[in-house]
Length: 118
Length: 454
Image 1 (spheres, chains in turn yellow, green):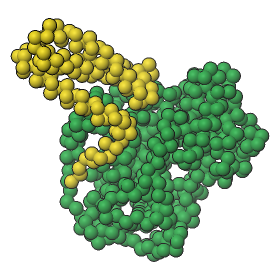
Image 2: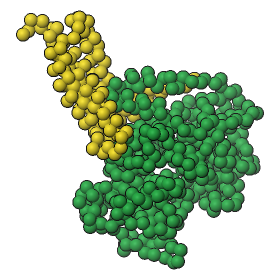
Image 3: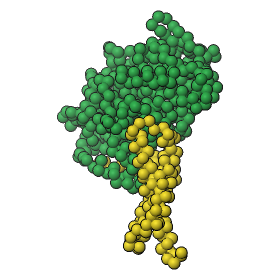
Image 4: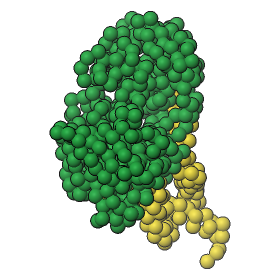
């Protein structure tokens, strides 16, 4: 039975991303868990906070593109065809969603800790 | 694992589509956990029982093909003695040489240690096969050790015949505007230094390829495009002249690709001199001499990327394993069956990787698709059965056309384009996504291939 060699990929990813290899998944998991916790705690979405988070999300999209540019020693300005623009959009979108969730969760956790802090 | 069908759903040293899907997810920052989750179904497909045997299998050469074959054999056989013979301790990730010579990756990017990839239970003899004796089923190493085998896989790679160019020596690489990407990781680094210096000053850049079969025929083209890009970035392109010397009347063995490259060269103002084969170089005067249909021609250069003639290593060239006649005979490539890579006259011998005397692809992508087929046939022989596995000549080349873009060129023995992502990644389009694959996904895939997992 073949097993997927985790070690091989880890080594190579380590080389490509350096410490980001660990920071990115940790951020993603922490963001999702705290987002879920905040949702459960508050019993729904807080619209004002969501809008603020989406603004951060837009920046997160650009950050994702920046990260990609760093890793591939190139950038979205090298896009040459439709599939490239699709990829640019995908990366930006993932950055946006990730940053939005993370920003929402962070704000939620702070509000949670200081419930009367207005 | 069997790869019995033409590999339409894979590319390069294995940018197979599951991997690229994984890559997309990984890029999303979802990270390694998601990566593993997605990849699991892709490889849960089959688990054939191990084949019990007492056979002794010798693998000559521990490059990409030798290591990948060792991994697959070790995984599928129970009780076999598997011996890998290779003198060099370092393993080179050759597809990365161009990136090193383009100043984009450090030398360490392409150097690792062979022993790290050696499957459990496989013996490595750090010597080199000096003599093949397929009649007596034995090989003799450079230290005089004779090793008998039941099955032999020849994966010795090829010989870079720098000495065939008069006045050329590997000592010259990295001096006086002379570069050569192929000679090894250190040569790639000093080639970059020479090219970077050239890009600052401008001048005449000379590129080309030998008349023999060669590793990755796209590499000399890539390096021309990359140099062009650096000159433009430095603002020195205007006072420079780039000349590509083709060994025949084309720029690539696949006509449709050749035409595309011709148009790109026209676009980038790279001049092409057809039917020029380098015969001599004068590094002091910076002049390269070429054989032409009518005589000789000289070109002066400020920077040159020397690509030497390539032949089978002497041990193979001087053995009965070589082609006895025809186009492959002169340079001593191994006489193997195209679809199975089994030797035509010695059925217990297989030739994989660069040394195989088959048309096309001396690339990591070829290795990726050759090895499983040869292994299937070898194991079938052990079992006394036959295998239907076929290698269709698939190979692939992410042909860099400028920094940040590449064309994903994939083709087979018959010069058919066999795109892995038809309708998504167009084979003759300069795309960023192809560059992204080249810089990110290729090496992980290659490493998995060495371990028999891709």
